[in-house]
Length: 430
Ligand SMILES: Cc1ncc(COP(=O)(O)O)c(C=O)c1O
Ligand SMILES: N[C@@H](CCOP(=O)(O)O)C(=O)O
Picture 1 (cartoon, rainbow, N blue to C red):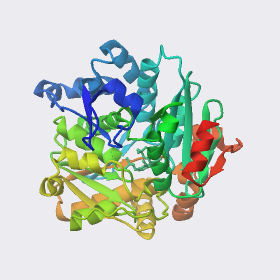
Picture 2 (cartoon, rainbow, N blue to C red):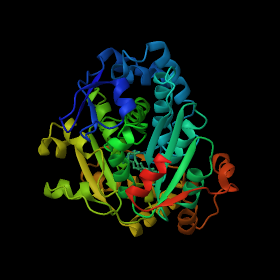
Picture 3 (spheres, rainbow, N blue to C red):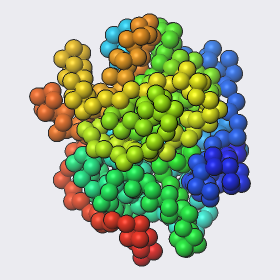
C-alpha cells in the first residue's frame, strides 16, 4: 500500500517509508491511497475467527507487500497476546476494556505492532533510529515498553511536567536502557509541536534517523481499528445499531474506528467524548476549527488542544461537513460531571471506571437520550489504578494495584527537564 501526505505537497511513499519517516516532509500526516472494504464472506464467518485472524484480514491491505504474510501473522500474534474483554452494563451500554496489556492502556497494541514492524524493516540497518514520542500520559509508557531493549532503536519521550498521573510518570521515567525521558515545561501540545518541528529540522535529520511513535505514525495508528472489530464480533448477533463512544484527545482512536467503518464494519455512529478540551465538539457545532491551549483535567491523557488526527477524520468523510455530522457526534464534559459519572457507574453497576472511560460513559448517555434503541459501547481506555488518587477519592474505596503497576512503584524517576525547542535539539545532538 502507498500512502499520501494529507498536506498534498510531498511524494507518495510505501508503508515501509511511511513507518520509517513517521511524518511526511511537508509536515502532513500519511493516509492510505485506497481502502478496500472487506468482502461479505469475512463478515459471514467473523464469529469463527480469532482476534489474530480478524486483525490479519483487517490490516493486510495496509502493510502489504512490504511485510510478507507469514511475518505479519507473527507480528499480530505477538502484539495481541492479551485479552479485550467486554462487559455489558445493560441493554444499551457495554464497556470494551482495552487495558489488559503491559502498560494498562489502549496504546499497547499500536506500540507493540509498530515496534515489530520497525524491527522487521530495520533488521539489516546498521544506523540507529531515534523514535520520538510526545505523551500526555499513556503513549509514552506503551512505546517505551514496546521498544525496551530493541537493538538499534533509541526512544525519546517528551511529557508535560506536572500534567500526568504519578503512576504514569513512574512508567515513563523508570525504564532506562534505550529509553530516555524529557520532562517539558509546557503542555502536551508543546511536546507534540517540538516533535513535529524536529522532523523538519534538516540540521537534525541530516545527522540522525528520526521517526515518530505517536498516532502520526500509520503503524501506531492503524492497529487500533482492531478494537472496533472485536467489539462488533461480540455484539452483532444481539444488537443492531452499534455505536461507539470513544474518549478522545488526539483523536487517533476514534479515527481508527472510522477506518474499521470504511472496511465495512456496520458501525452506526461515533461519539467523540471529550473533557473540557473541546475543539472538535465546538467544530461540530460551529464548523469552525479553533485549536486552543489545552486545559488540565482529571482525564489528563485527553488534554489536547490541537488534535493531530482531526485532518484524517476530515479526509475519511471527504471533507464534507454534513457527512461528518451524520457519522460523528461530540460532547464535552467537565471534571465534576466526570466524577459524578465514576460514582454512578460504581454505585449502579459495581464497576470501577477510570476518568477517561467515565467521559466515554457520559458520551453514551448523551447520545442515548435521543437514540434510545442504539447499543453504545464505550472504550475503557486505561486501567483505573493508573489514576489512583482521583479514583479512590471519588468512589471512596481502596484499589488493589495490578502487578504491571506494582512493578514500577519503587523505581526511581530519571528525566531531563527542558523548556524550549532549542533545549530539545541540543539534547538530541548530544
Ligand atoms: C486513557 C486514554 N484515553 C483516551 C485517550 C485519547 O485517545 P486519542 O488520543 O486516540 O483520542 C488517551 C490518549 O491517547 C488515553 O491515554
Ligand atoms: N493521549 C496520548 C496523546 C498522544 O496520542 P497519540 O495517540 O497521538 O500517540 C497519550 O496518552 O500520550
